[in-house]
Amino acid sequence: MRKAGRIVAEVHELMRRMIRPGVTTAELDAAAEDLIRRRNAEPAFKGYPHTGHNDFPATICASLNEELVHGIPSPKRVLREGDIISIDVGAIYRGFYGDAAWTYPVGEISEEAQRLLEATEGALYAGIAAARAGHRLQEVSAAIQRYVEERGFNVVREYTGHGIGRAMHEPPQVLNYVNEHDRDGRTVMRPGLTIALEPMVNAGTWRTRVLSDGWTVVTADGRLSAHFEHTIAVTDGEPEILTRL
Ligand code: MG
Image (cartoon, rainbow, N blue to C red; front, side, top):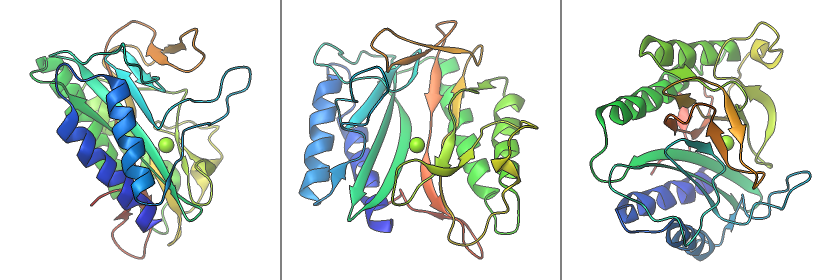
């Protein structure tokens, strides 16, 4: 998982360097897939099934502005100054998965967009800091929610973090907010637990809807959304971030 995570981190470094006005999301996708395959790994999202819709067709999810997650790369989507773009990418190396997402600014962005990015990234690290052996998973959810709401933004309810290892999505589910019906939240974390924490944060309402392509999730009110994710391992001490160089 360290190796898979490292490959994912390398893809994000590449995305960070490539993202600028004029680049298409299809170009980002092609570069990401090429890098993953050169590392003898496979894209984890390509061909991912979705009941009633086509399998996911690409290596990265590229979600712009009001799009939260699962945006499909296209040669027609050209990045423009002032956009924010969330890139989510997973890789499989020798049967093990890594998964990470980051929201990048395209050139100069608005003050609100900047605050949203900082709140979402900060929420991810607040969640990671709470991922301690002996503590309940719900403490991670609480830390993320608190960090976001203190900054005046809202966490998405319909999508969550997840266990990860030999599959991309494994139990337990990791909510980004506290819910009394969250059974997985009562899980006591132990060293060796590997989870993907991924706050999705909206500038306005937390409500979302799915576009007619069956994949792209957008905010219900059309305002901005950001998404930051790391795959981590719970240890005896500090959590280990696996999707970092
Ligand atoms: Mg994930």
